[in-house]
Image (cartoon, rainbow, N blue to C red; front, side, top):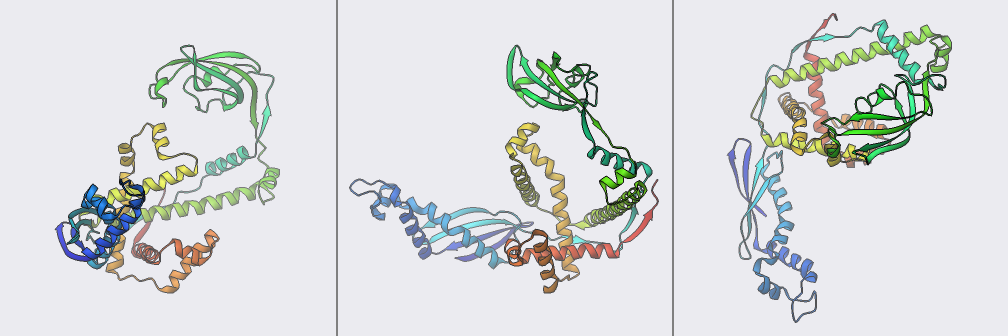
Length: 431
C-alpha cells in the first residue's frame, strides 16, 4: 500500500489517493479464487477443481476483483489514515478509480476530519448558583412516599368501586361485534383513575360491585397506536372480581422504627431533610456546571461538519437500541408503538447530539491550549476505580477501554475542573 496523495478539498474534508500494488492485488485475487472456487460449477471439472484461468475466461477477468478489493482496502485505508496523521471523525467514502492486474488498485477515500475550533473566555465565567431550600412540604411528600411503599392492600366488600381503588376484573373487547387482538384479559389489576386505559373506560367501572357483570362502551382515540382500531367504537364485556384499597401506616415513632434505623419520627424527618439538602446542593452544582459548559459552547467558533452530528446520532441510536433489547424490545418495535419513523426518531436526538459534539470539541481544544496532561499514576487510579465499580480485574477493564481513549476522557474531565475552578460563582437567594 502507498499513500499517493493527501489533498485538502474542502473545509474539514480531505481526499486520500491510495494505491495497492499489483503483487498484493494478485495475492488477494488468488485468495478470493480459493475462497470461491468450491461454489463454482464448470463443465468438465469436478466442483471446486476448476482452474482459475478457466473461471476467469468464462466469467471475465474481473470475476474475483470485488472480493479481492474488499479484502485489501480496510487495512490499506487504515494505514493511509495513520500515515496522513489526519483525525477522522466519520466513516470515509471510498471510490475505486482504477483496477487491473498490471497496475493494481487505486482508490480515493474522502475523509471528514476533526475541525479546528477556537474557544474564548473560558476562564472566569460568571454564573449564579441557586440551591433550592427544603420545605416542610418536601419532607411531607417524602414521608407520604414511604407510607405508600409500606402500605398494605385491604379487600373491600361492603361498597362499590371508587376512583383510587385497585380493582381486579375480566374484560373482553369487541369492535363491530368481532373480538380483536389484545382486547381480552382475565383477573386484570387496574388502579381506577390512573389513566392506564383509554378515556372513559375506568370511569365506567366506578360504582360497580363485586361479581357484577357490565358493558363498557368507549371509542378508541384517533391517534391510537393500532391502526385498525383508530376512532372505532368498542364494547368491553366486563366482570368485577375484587376491590382493594391501600391502607397506609400511621406516621409515628413506630413507623420510624419499622422503616428506618431511627427510633423517633423527628429523627427520621431530620435525616430526610439532611439528605434532601445534600441532594439539592448537588443539583445546584450540576446546574452550575451545565451553565458553564453552555457558556463555553457559546464562546466557541469553528465550522463543524454535518457528518460529526450524524455520526453521534448513529452512536446514540445504537445505545438506545441496546437498552431496548435488554428490555425485550428493539428500535423497530419502539418506533411502531410511538408512531415515529426513522427520520423523525433521528431528529429527536439532533439537539442532544449537537450539544455533545460541541462540548467535546470545546473541551478538547482547552486541553490542547492549556497543555493538560494526565500522568500514568492518575490513569492507573481511574482504571482501579472502574475495576472496583464493575467487580472486574484491572486488566479486563483495560481490554474494554483503550488507554488512548481513556486518557483523552480524563484530560477532558480536567478541563471541566479548570473551568469550574476559575469560574466566578455567586449565590442566588431562591424565591
